Image 1 (cartoon, rainbow, N blue to C red):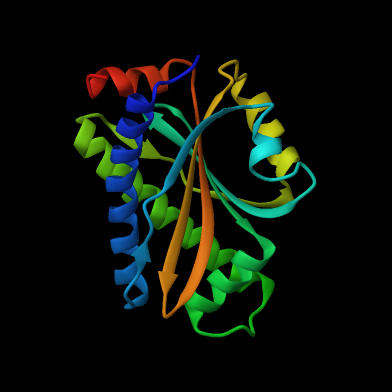
Image 2: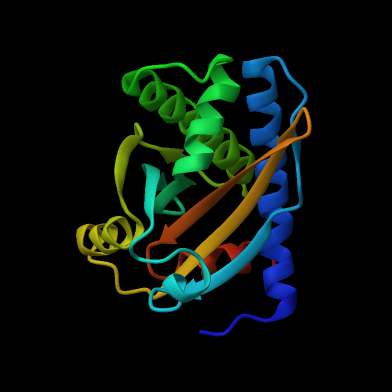
Amino acid sequence: MNYSALQIDGLKEIINIGGGNAATSIAKLVDKKIEMQVPEVEILSYKTIYEQMLAETEEVTAVLSTVLGDLPGVFLFILTKRSASKMTEFLIGSDEYKKEVQESAITELANILTNSFLGAIGKLLKKEVISTSPHLYFDYFGAIISSIYMEMNQFDEQILIIRNEFRYDQESLEASLFFIPEPGVIEKILKIIGI
């Protein structure tokens, strides 16, 4: 399905509210001012995602949360190796840490980000939206996306992609959020907001 510019703008507005809420939550966690650029929002097909986002063979850190309630799907927080390292340094104030510390820090950050994001969107849309406990993966981007599709028995080709850039102390951290909805969920959101 093709979406109009108006529909994409409507989704972007909702996502901006969710992202702002998430940035505030992260700022409270680390006690630093966090700025977030207006996110880029795209709806891409499963096949196009590798051409426009990340290569199938790109090694990434991914945190996956299953979204339950009125708008079900999967929420995926993706960081490149460099961003994962920078994010850990940002969270714990050091670049000397064990692998377990990095895993714990990134998982906790993704959990806060996801729940803050979904909480704001659920409140705005007046829908119940909750997420399960996050699971951390280190793998190739293509392998992660493929396994999600197989697990979900996913037939909806549309993936809502949110590219965010967080800034603190002149540093920027890029993170991509992928919402892989169950079939019909994006249309449901558009219907709720009247577009």
